[in-house]
Image (tube, rainbow, N blue to C red):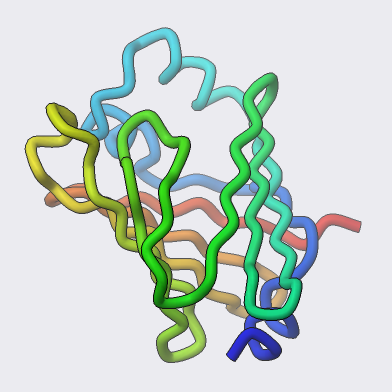
Length: 140
């Protein structure tokens, strides 16, 4: 599976379009200052695969978040709103489900689905009844 993930997803991607991202941030409880910054920056995502280990490095302006994991194994996140997560490779998609930190999100799971469509990486993020998309193009 890691070889298929590497072939499909590995590389550097830059966001080119967002849909319903502001509503997603609001549902996540992001404060107004962080929300304004998040809506203005154009993040890049770099995904690499080394053996069974997958690493995702997201750079958004002054903020960088890196997470490394193995498929099917629970891992801790540095995210403010989720404490741990698990990623599966299902039907050609990377599906991550994150458990909320105590007191955040009222117990709602955060789901992030990454899939390749043509030359784009589509990242669909859901929490409760709110869904957002971020569309990335491969960086040159």
